[in-house]
Amino acid sequence: MSENTCTVGIDLGGTNVVFGLVTARGELLQHFSRPTEGERGPARVIENILEGTEEIISHAEAYRVNGIGLGSPGVIDSGSGVVLHCAPNIPQWSGQQIRQPLLERFGLPVFVDNDAKMAVIGEATFGAGAGKKHLLVVTLGTGIGGGVVLNGRIHRGAYFCAGEIGHAVVQIGGRRCACGVEGHLEAYLSAKGLVGQVKEKLAGGGTSVLTGQTGGDLSRLEAKMIVDAAKAGDKLAGEVLELSAHYLGMALANFAMVFDPEIMIISGGIALAGEILFDPVQRAYDRYIFYTEVRKAPIVPAKLGFEAGMVGAAAMAILELKLS
Image (cartoon, rainbow, N blue to C red; front, side):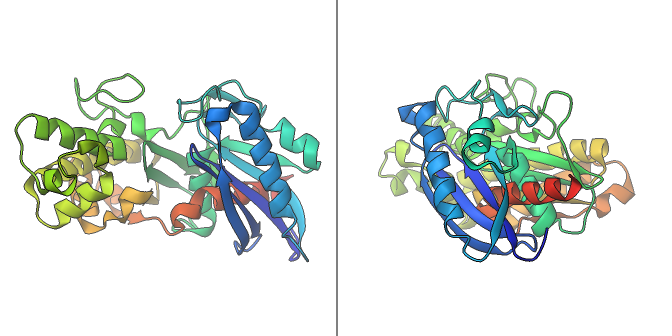
């Protein structure tokens, strides 16, 4: 890519779609978001993506746009551009063709993949994993996503499910995940998992400052409130966060022995918790990993923050265009 070119990065979420223009050096030229409007159906979502893409391209000014990257929730066939399966955060999104509409409207190369995998590519290219060839990224949000980079390329697997660490089993007969299976990591350390555990403990007679902070209305409870309460010394919140972080460290040890990464990166809103999250993660990882050399792979917070998915989508387009 020449110095005066850029790519479009699109991060599709259940609530908003984020659009950006990124240069080959990783410079973010412009970005904005607009509502997804998933409740209005897939056709409306596609139209919002097309309208937003047209608008962001209009901001390119002296730069020539030479490709588009789109990250979407769900299991994505990156070759055909079809959403093979998607959780209900975007209704009726499963089965949608998301590559072809962009290709037809703009006539530019279009690259699509799972949104968490795009965040992985962003961190690997311009974030905490820059310069590394083998890395694992875990995204802690409403759910838990992730991905693996091997030899500098995203590893998708035979059925596009590689790196789904949120669905690693960490507790036999444990809490039920949103996918319906018991004991998955996502049932514990996702935002929903943390909130669910606290509600269960309070319903069982536990006490916490969170009851007062929510005015007794636990529908107002959020993951950040739990993290803040744990930092302030609340015993119930602290126990929930420590157990959940322990399970992440266990899962990372398992994945590290399979993929042998140089670095493991934790991203997403919950990752902003800092030491109260990372310390128990590291202790559990050290406990379960068996080979001394693997312990040298650091577990670090992400650098790109909430823009990782959008920047990663643009980075995928940049990388694929270089290879073509």
